[in-house]
Image (tube, rainbow, N blue to C red; front, side):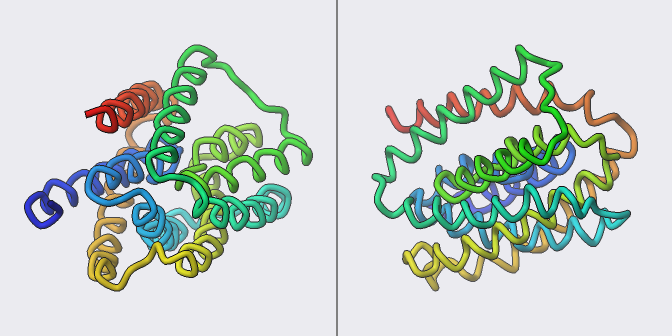
Length: 243
């Protein structure tokens, strides 16, 4: 199936990278459900981790105007610890069940953010730790936790460049950790490794385009559009499983 629709897959991955960069939620929130149409869910988890490794290195290079060390410690360390737990537990769940979890997660997440537009989390060390735990566990189990990390990071009032760079550094640690666990779980097969260099090129192009868009519009202007897309993707995940 992938060979027949390879061009479509690459275009959707590029779109995921652009939207993830501009929306501030990370590309995995789009990449995981898109890749789920072409691969079994556990393979998607492995691909996502490898794709994100490349994507986050590129983001750090493009958005290197400072990082928030406090956030990296209080949010990043719990995220790395709990992504390992989530990634380990993923092998014990039925792949269809994980796909349902993902669809439900995306639907609930988008609706909450669309209804509660001024949803704000207090900028405290405790909330950073909680955000790190939830985002890390979600990333390990479902492949995506960037939205949870994004709403937590927004409490710390960073500019766009610092926000993306700090998020990318945390995500880099998360992806390195879960890549090891996914590999041991058998999610990263040799026959899909040829895709990784292609995804690296796409991450460079997508991040570059996303940065150009960010220079022209505010992140808030784009946020509702991204949330509606996440809602549609969540619903389509359910529909694809039913049919």
